[in-house]
Image 1 (cartoon, rainbow, N blue to C red):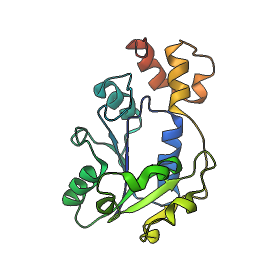
Image 2: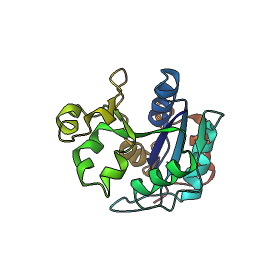
Image 3: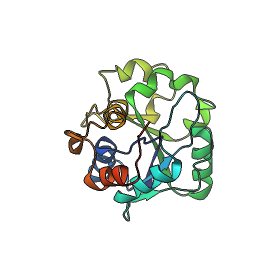
Image 4: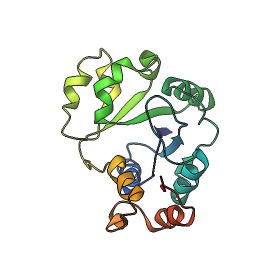
Amino acid sequence: MKIGVYVGSFDPFHKGHENIIYHLLNKKYVDKVVIIPTLSYWDKNIKTSLEDRINMIKNIEDSNIEVNTSLNAYEYTYEIMDELKRQHPEDNLYLIIGGDSLINFNKWKKVDNILENNILVIPRNNIDTNKYINEFKEKEKFIVVSDFYQDVSSTMIREKLLSKDYNNLDKYINKEILNYIKNNNLYTS
């Protein structure tokens, strides 16, 4: 089985994330996607709790989409990938990243461990993905999802939520998640 591993803060989880997941599943890049929301590491200023982010994501969970709640405390992506490899020794893992992540990918902790898996790269922000992929001897591990492009920014969505600007947010966030945000008074400061 080909398992896509989607790691991030998902603050908030939005239609851009959903579109990526469904595209990868529908086009058979992967057979299943495991979503792993992380705690607040590095310079991320996460506005909602891990529990709330998990609850928002669970709206799309189905037989091909799993929201993982056991690997969230791992600080580094290689730790998540190593643990999933132990749990799924017969399966092929595909880390899902945005093209903008390639800019500093060579600086990720134990990137060589990560590159024991395949990397699905989602084009973003007109980043020249090949320029960064060519820096690696394991070029064949990178699969650019060239039949998909969407540039939705979590930062822009957070700014709208924080300013209580709900106009046109239904373009970016599904109704259930937007209701969850409102009902739980998220993004209030």
